[in-house]
Image (cartoon, rainbow, N blue to C red; front, side, top):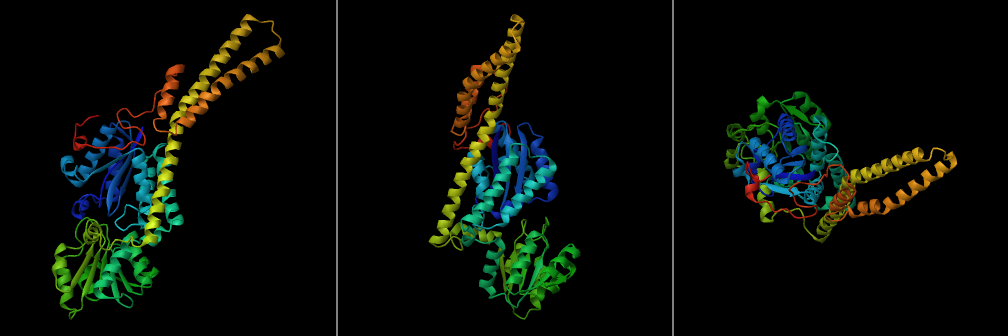
Length: 454
């Protein structure tokens, strides 16, 4: 079995395409089971955020696994595999591990160094556990990734190099309408992102009002930030009273239409309105950006700034050093996990070899008892201890060496050789057609098409 990562993110695709991949909880569950019920995927974890949708899977064949994961992603997006192939990234084994660690650390986020993705990964892992789609291969990888993410933030100072998507978006809003302290802000959505937005706004001194499809959730969040609540049915009036509108719902369609904002602007006497749309798919109708006096900050804007190199959170030698230190830590942790995974891969071979040796010794001692029935018990016991010591000494070097060599590139080959030399009847857990550990993967677009090589 081998680790495969296939996905699409802000690094390769426009926000408009990412919107097509938006997943609710039911979508995630469906995708998980569709993956593990396919021919080549045995375990799967789906990480779906506003910046990415990526599948981390254990597969028995590289090309077959890529093809099956790609088909699930294409179905979710309502597109063909061919249409998605220019935007899909594929990572295999060491590269997949390093990529997952990089994502967990916030180094692959739209806002470098943000911490929210670590919580999203934890939630994705928990869901996969609940659905039974992670097993002995993905469990240690996911757990290791969560530890690496925490280590990077705790030990490298990467937090100084970045902030949350909410923080950066509100910074952009402040550049358009000025400081938020003492100003009324309407937050639409009371989920994890809404809570983060409301808390951040409260710390900046804003006067927060919360609206949500769940009045109970809105009331709880509002109470936590000493704010108020509003009904979604009264959205135009609530927007008219606010200087900033922050939307971050999990809705699959538009929540704030152009007409609602236009109605709100008519009663504002020229006061500007900043609209921060953090949802994917977007909550706010794109037509809102064309209204006079309205300033929209959304994921597409932030993606454009990042691509252009403006507004990039990594600035200055200290932040750059932190990022470099984070990458170094990830490289070391990737090597450590590789050694652990390869040691685990050769463990069945070592166990089988020792079991076979024990069976041979027991059979020969029984044969000796038959041939020399008058041998006294003391001599019989000494002979048995001697034979076992000899066998243990003979096996010690090859079993120790195969464990040591397992942590080197191609190390699993030594386990293959041991199995062949000693005639061990266990299956080799080696990828049938994929690249070896630590090798780079170059994927041809044809690999992403149904019926590709497997």
